[in-house]
Image (cartoon, rainbow, N blue to C red; front, side, top):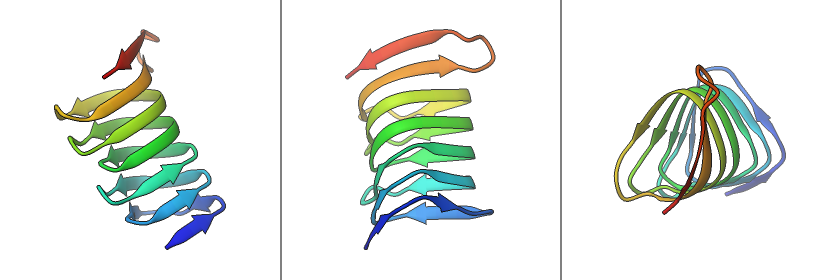
Length: 102
């Protein structure tokens, strides 16, 4: 399944297909087979698939299967080893920025 357009919802969203557009929801989980090209605004974001864009999340979890390119803004970060990253990280609390290419 492929969606071209923005998604706005309350509750949980599990993405297993392809989306080109922005996502705004309470909780998003991009599964290992998921692909999102756009921006995310959520309380909790978990990325295990392919993602290109910017994330604005209170809690951000990066799974070992993730392939991420973009800017990640977070309050709490959890990351598993093994993910492919080309990102700029910004801690919202401190404003501290880091660049990661792995």
